[in-house]
Length: 200
Image (cartoon, rainbow, N blue to C red; front, top):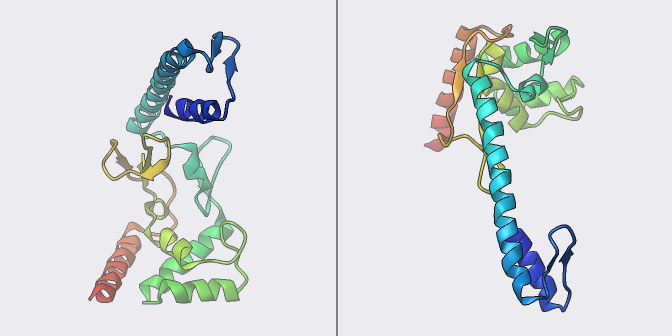
């Protein structure tokens, strides 16, 4: 509604009218803006209602431990013929190498340099970055777990990290693990210790 009104008002200030044929509304008439505001409010309410229904469908799936399709795009995983998450062996070797190096005390920047030097492509096909390495090392999917509803849509329908605005589900043993839970936890402890030293 806000976008529609702002746009039509700007056009009206330039002497340009908008005619909505289906609703028979002309923004240059006195009653046009009022009718348009009412129609816009109904349309927005309908859109928000549909969005809420869609959100409820996803939340019901999440509460049953059913993952979203986005999780299939995670590096070293794919969806098999049974619609289950399966490991991509060649990429899994890269993930395992990252965790092994991180556990030995190698920093993300050095891991990045090694992968790029060895010509191992990143998930997007180019060179690895520090942030991509960090995301892999912090991702619970590599120990076989999954977090559902990691993001949410704000009032402007932009995707944001879910910081408690919506319910979130943590499912253990959801799919095959690439690294052991114990190694994953050890790497998290090392990463936390390094962050602590950087902050001091």
